[in-house]
Length: 354
Ligand code: ATP
Ligand code: MG
Ligand code: MG
Image (cartoon, rainbow, N blue to C red; front, top):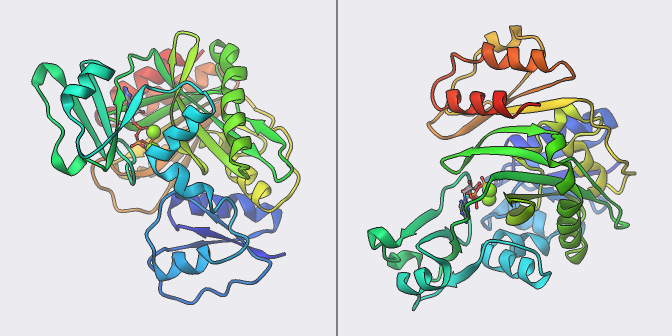
């Protein structure tokens, strides 16, 4: 069979490759800085582990391939301005916003969006980088370098953050994982739990929203939708046209994980609803070194990305899935020596597990 090339060689590319291995499919993550000539064949398939990329020798070769799945969609979702326009066009709920233009003022932001406004850079932001708060009480102004480069969003007083991961095939069939409850600390995802019975009544709403977007974009593969839950209403925070951190629990918790589903979809292979096995939880490893003693904790699964450890950098994750909730609680206790803010993240998991 043909090869599947992945634009990007980070952890998502590595996990796509890992998931495709049992299917006998050859997945080749590409470091975007490589200057090699890639041996792309006419019947190969190209996908991406990131929605935004610079023009390099490698990305130019990949983008020129006729089988680059969703090629036109990436720039539309990578720019928060056009992403928000898509959400508005489809009449889906999202945080009220406006584009930050050259003549935009903080005063206008406070008038139209309220006394706390979050500016987000249109491109390249992740893990809460590329955000800037405007606070009327502090008289914050819009810095010059943000004009024309950002959107401004109303601060949402959400109850909690949830996400849904879906997959769409070439023939338009769609499947979704159950909603995931997420904890972000300082804009970065620390922990996830899924499934949760108390979120089940929102599942249809989430599927309708993400399904509408995937259909409108004629999208093929896995897409994630991050939402704010405000009572029984979901507001879209942002979309990710790729496998997503909040779906990592599916590696332990679903018969077909998000990575395999993405590969199946872009390769045109059959999709089927994934069986969700049991209660899952995921802990991101952020700025902490690997501790192989974790392997002695029953039921815990380690993914280490082989990246240099730096403060605030995602370097791995831990998954656990069990029908025995006491076992999950006991795993959390075993992790209690992790440094701050893990005390907060572990307590959040302990509290939110059923
Ligand atoms: P990611 O790593 O998920 O791609 P990102 O840098 O693209 O993150 P967002 O997801 O837009 O950024 O925001 C990061 C976090 O900041 C959110 O998960 C949420 O906790 C908080 N946040 C974002 N937008 C708002 C808002 N309008 N009101 C309140 N909090 C917000
Ligand atoms: Mg983002
Ligand atoms: Mg986000």
